[in-house]
Length: 372
Image (cartoon, rainbow, N blue to C red; front, side):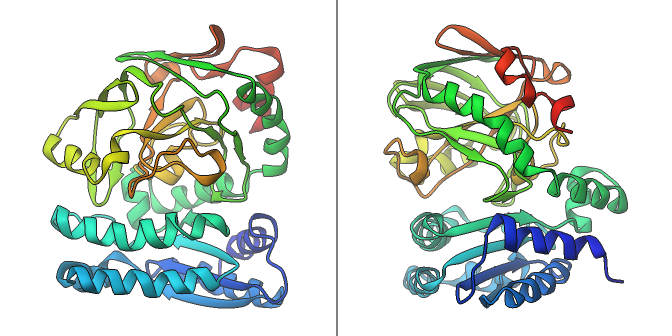
């Protein structure tokens, strides 16, 4: 049965998020059988706007035979082929509704490194981020299971989150953007966390519905060598088919010198050893979405949790570039609301957010009751 909310969401994505124009080449990537329903709506909406669509089905279950058996030369040629397509595209949108997000869990680290270097680094980090782009999940049963919610209830939550009034959120972000742009030192404090760094001179970017859906974050990046202290992430993180919990870093002069977690620490450190930039940080962001209040084991949602922050090992985005380059970009999340232990964020010694709530008068429009 057709869900009319898909039509509304597809129209918002092609008009507000991507602002597709007649004649633009539109690259649509789909993961998961259930996500095809939204894919069809997107193809229709894009075509009616005059764009020219190209679509690619890329579920992990479907890709397993290639990823498990490809040689380095095959990975390189596959990445080069997709890079050429991305280079020709004007806009990219991914609908990610993987049938089983653990389908790559048993693939060895060297093979995953070949995949990531060929595809994520060369195609997505190297080309896609310079285009108009947007990424969203699809509320399939697998995602509801990870969120530990009934499928129907999760779908209701999903559409409420994804159709937030992003224009209103964008206006409320403006004072925070201005404050971040004038800030030098950031201090993060909380259970297991005592970390400081500079963001001086690094651009600040609002994420207000044009890049990720759901959206609701504002990001910059630490000055590369300025990060010092310890940080404990309390949100679990599903990365390349492995669920990591209680990730903790000790950082010295911008480098992660010790990494631990509750689980496979060798695998964690293998992720961080993919290249030199993976042990440095490429993003610092504050989560602002009032409808997302707890982890769903899905980074695209979890990084937007209201009252959270993420400090990301790996590649910096071009729009907030601190010079760090890597095939990794891993948004690890720490939630600072009272139910998650609380915490404080200070800018240049001034308390800005406490226990997930903004305390400065000019920022209180970003508190949940003002946005929900």
